[in-house]
Image (cartoon, rainbow, N blue to C red; front, side):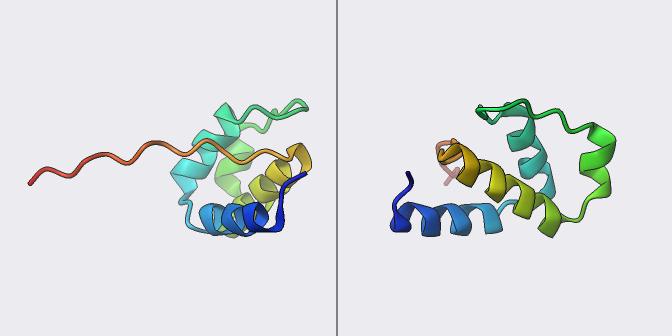
Length: 75
């Protein structure tokens, strides 16, 4: 089970995701159940709804999404 601090961090992370990143997560997240949203469905949903669905998936699976390593900025 995720700890309270992990749930808060998950909410912060998911609330900052944009549409393209959310859709990437939907296609790459290792859920404990089949996730078969069509591209048409994902495109038709608002960003807030995508965030809600993705958060629910993460909470159900009790897994945080993998976050990419930060890329260094050129000086």
